[in-house]
Image (tube, rainbow, N blue to C red; front, side, top):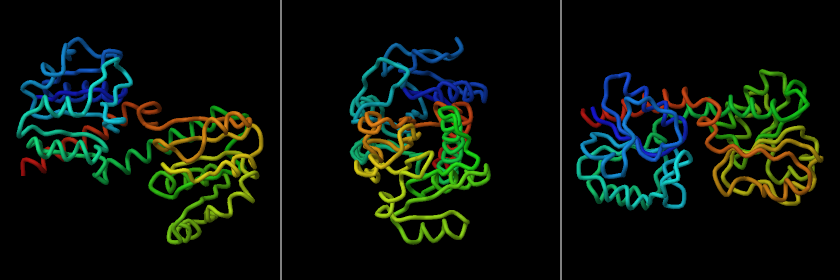
Length: 286
C-alpha cells in the first residue's frame, strides 16, 4: 500500500519507518524536524505527499484549534486544507478528529478511521501514558513514590492504570471521581476514593497530584491549600484540570505532559498506531 504520514510527534516518525519495513511505500510531510531515513521521501507540499496514497495518516491527537498537530514542523495546515487535498475513496486514519473535521471528511467521501475509537489502541495508549507519568513524577521530586500520598483526579482508563501501578510501587494512591460507580470500583480495588467536594479539606496532604480530566476539577481554592513544592502533573488536554499559572505562582512544581506517549515511549506508541491502522484497513477491505 501507499501511505502518506502527515504531521505529529516522534511516534509518526517511527511509524514511517515501521510501515516502510513492512514493504509499504511511505511519504511524509510536516515532519521536517524528525529524524527519518533517506528512503522515506519528505514531500515538498501537501498535494505531493497525499498524491496516490491509499491511506493518509494524521497524528493522535490529529488537530489543535482546527490546525493539524505539527510539533515537528513549522507548517501551519488547516484541517479544511488537508481534507480538500484528498479525494473520494481514500482512507483517512487519525486520532480524535473534531466533529467539524469528521463531518467535512464524510462529505468529501473519505473513509474515516479514528483510532481513538478502537479499544486496543486506547488501552495500550493509556498504559504507555501511565508508565510515562510514573517516570515524570520520579524524575521531578526528591521524594520516592514508595510511601508517598498521591492524588489522581479522574478514574478513566489512565486513572485506573496509574492508580494500580502506584499501589504496586508502594505508594498510597487516592482517586477523586465524579461518578459513584467509579468511586465504588476504586474502593473494591483497595484504592481510597473521594468526591471532588471533599478535596479542599485533604488536598494539602498529598505529595504528588496527577490530573487526567480535561476539565477544571481542581479549583483555585484547592490549589492554594497545597503544600509548596508539591509536584502536580497535567496529563489532560486543554483546558486541563487546574490553572497552571496559578499553581506555578504559589510554589507548586507544575509538570505539563499531554500526549505523553509521544514523549516517553514514541516507538511503542508507533507500534500501537500501526496495529490499529492495519486493523482498521482490514475491516474496511472486508
